[in-house]
Image (tube, rainbow, N blue to C red; front, side, top):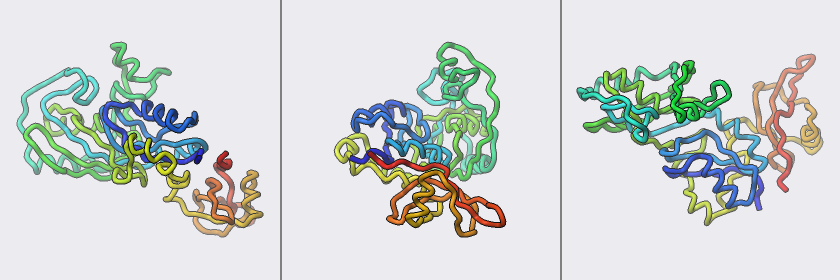
Length: 294
């Protein structure tokens, strides 16, 4: 049995990300399970799940850009920002033209300030915002910097529109929908969301929970599958042992950055960083070494 690795899960709507983690724990009989990037219960799409030692690599995928397809519906706002919440405002609207919509979407490309919704897992004063919201409290939230790399109109209909967006970690698509609506002088909520990519994990290769239950071990990808964007370094037996024991080694002087480390048998060891050493030397220092599967 493979005790560490990553599963590209297609999260169904109606389940929380924690529900999926619990399902995988039961299915594989393993306690160390985590996920990269929470998806709202009503949303579907790519949810990478990490097992065993691979959970130590979650941070390297959580920071990756994410791609979504979302539907925005005009005419009302809710306390949650999506159509599952309580309506807090509604108003008639004049449907924007296609040109207005495209220009408004394009205006969001780049760095933006976004206020997290009350129904989110952001912590203020040690409590998650959604806990405060459920208690009927509304607190002031500081804007957070996000990046919209790309956004494009996919389809229009009388009540709203569908768009694709590629964005940074920490972007709330519910908030983005409301902000788009305001720029178009319309109240708006998110009425559909599917995450189509996290880093190099795509919707087309994701597996349903039913498929994972049938495939079991075949559904688990190797831990280094989340690190394909890092350069790879293959070490000799002597250098491999040194790195495994936490020691830095001399390396070729090229780009100073994170790398994936493999031993002389091309077995994944972990992550290292190339740094400048004394007298102009370049060193490879271990950052995160994974112990062997047991």
